[in-house]
Length: 328
Image 1 (cartoon, rainbow, N blue to C red):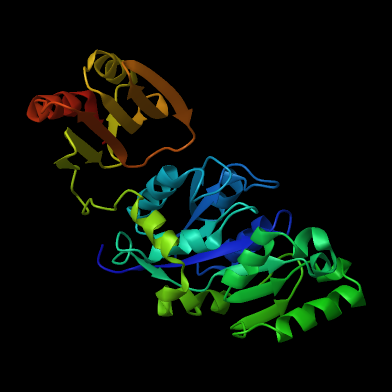
Image 2 (spheres, rainbow, N blue to C red):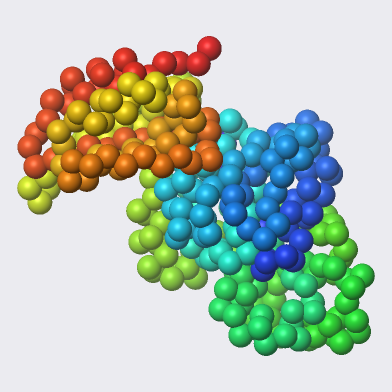
């Protein structure tokens, strides 16, 4: 990729109107731009992929409750597949119970430094929630607001004067001050807010150390444009490993892949594969192979084989290449 993709996180607690806000942004985006959206599959409201696609967006959904913790690997898989389509902007919507700082840590880590230009994190807030201890004592609620560069006070049409006063008081006490604080309805906001800088991109030390460590554990964005696959080997602590990363254009035969992994005599096999029957996660331990279907599609496939013996990696690679085909 020749340039970094401007990226925004749009966060906010459950039911605050993130979906509507993203839809409005897509409706008002420059017509000549292609935007991508990575969103949790599960949530109180969720995003209708068909609706977003109609607005010119590239959509990926990540299963699980928290983008970073619950589904860290699918999160990076989703980001990578969207980046490979070279969008003009990437929007990431964590679940309403998510941890934005951990997602920020992933985006500013070495694996994405050359691909993502992190811009302002936008938090939507229902001002009425500031009057309810159910929210003000919730750690995620406070973390989302603390992580935000821009705060949008949404649903003003249903707020009374007490809620609006509470919002103004809260905003005036923020240290450091937010780059922008806006009151609105239906999640409407200026596109210019997305171009503001991220406090964490400018001062990454504000991210706690364990978040950095967590982020470095995510899969790496390693395929150059036009590169079909890469192979990585490692050894240590009495084990040998070999892993492959295949581009999104490679589609594997599910039946043949299942048969091969069943017969493979390795101590451990882990894979997330793009197949002719959809996306599947494969996990083999103690000779038992388990398979789980995921909702992702058109992404980079990954497989890693681990054993106490050095296996014939060249032969295994040849088999994998035979099982995969390139979409025309």
